Image (tube, rainbow, N blue to C red; front, side, top):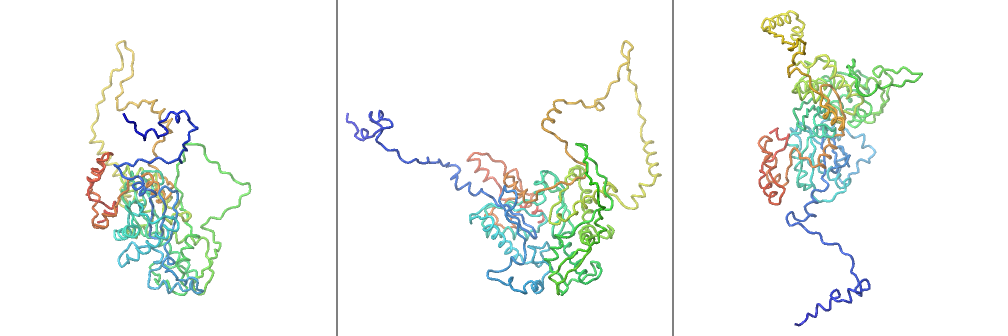
Length: 581
């Protein structure tokens, strides 16, 4: 038998090499990383999981844009839309000496403050192409300057107000799909994310926004109903303008119906200065009668420390000390002095309007506290009991000093005075005060009521001793479950708070959307780019026409995943925004 000469030359086949051990003449090669096995079922790991890395969360409003990565505690970029955003490359007019004084020529032919808005809710005559260009420029600037991302497509989570019109939603989706090549866009509702960021499943979210104030009832992460009013930040800016304009002219304030619409006169004030005064100097008065607040039974009472020599503080409503405000946008620039107490009048007129009766308002211009009380009154009983204990204030105007506590106190006073009876008026009050009607109704109830025959049970036993009568099971007191009480004590169980008015804080809709995206919670609607490019907004179906359970019937195996994808219907929705079709 002939031997193979190749085997004899191998060093590991010889006895000498085995006995040599560490003194072998062969030099070891450099260390190498073992090859990672690639699964043929799911494809390349580097190619499939890279798309899911770092989804981008965008909260879009009419005046501001918040943008950042999913899982972050705060957005990387908060951008406000303004006229400086519309400057072209090489436009250095902002450095001219008289640029600030020429704001009237730039604002002529437009509504007052229109350059500081991305869109208006009234889309009649609005240029949607300009809206797409503004949004694209701000998104591109935020992505490549602040988020420092590359041009690779990324998934996007979009947080929008539920009252956004369909044309504006379509323009927003077109901008992100066509110009940023996002593979999918997940739509989330702002009130739901505000409740999610507050750590609660149900809430009454009061969004004090720019165009309107919305009151949304959330129950188990579902929007029950939404109410709205025009008393919001835009109306507050107009009231601030009237306050400053009357101080410049030296005239008393006039009613809203008697005001002139021309805000480009020489004594007029620019939008930027009005917004700065409204943001930094306005405050809200307190209610005249403080509601009765129930003290908590848990813990000790708070002891307030007082100094020995206290100076009597002047109430803010009686503080008439002048506040100097410098106005550079009017011609000529001047400094006006406004009493501190008058700085609360724009907020009082915008959100409450106490000088007019409730019957003089239309449904779209109700004061905020009346709108909140009406929203709670129209909710079902179980939903109201949960939502009234979880009132959340959000929006830009909620940062005004004293506004949230004033709204909460006004609603508490209305609940104490009127209760939860939806029938009100002089007729209802006379009916309640008429004792004769109550006496007649009580007499008829006694006549129609059958007299029960009570049979006294025998409470003696055979020996003649008295025993306790038997108690019915429905009237027997519930026995204490010691095991259940021990489990509740170990888990620090606390009963659900409901039936009392209570306000809670929230981290904001963007933080809620960031947390929900990081936890991979299903969105209200998920839109694929290929389907959107084929069908557009007209391909969306109503939410009630889509069977959600069909897409969930799939297994985790390789073949089951393919079957689940093939079994998903082509019907897709726009969530709560699709109900407007």
